[in-house]
Length: 236
Image (cartoon, rainbow, N blue to C red; front, side, top):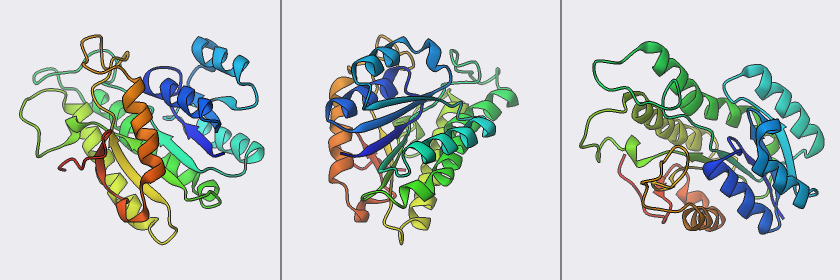
């Protein structure tokens, strides 16, 4: 049984990660901005009370990160997997701004949530990961971050924030190599979620299941890679 910390767990990918890890018998610490409004998480907790802990954390807020760490460290003491899943598509979380609409506040918010927060959370929870069993950090990125594959315009703040997250993943993997902690950037596919939209080609259950299996299989030689949900390397 492993102890898993998932950010942005109230919906979409984070909720599905939470559901599947619990069903596999692991302990899950699910964080989100407003747990009191996370109806599906609350239903899961009522069903799996001993396996699921809900903790309030806005990843962009230092006070929240510090308070969440203190509570999780006190109650669990160790982490085996950290999934940095929380992310936003744009500064208002609904509209992607195109050329001619760019404004710096959009970039500031998107980079804080998508790029900087995963690094700060990884750094904060490192003492608990060092105590874990073959600990792993999983940063949820997107193939929209691939410079080599980019062939269209638009989505400036989202794409560049995820490209930054990829570089953070690579640097962090180098820093944590001697500690034996694996760090990966994973593209989960274009999934039918609130962020992915109803026209996305994939339901979330299979890709998330395959990512969980992938997390179990990777070795330290894989650290720092940018992988698809199917385990294939994606060009930077």
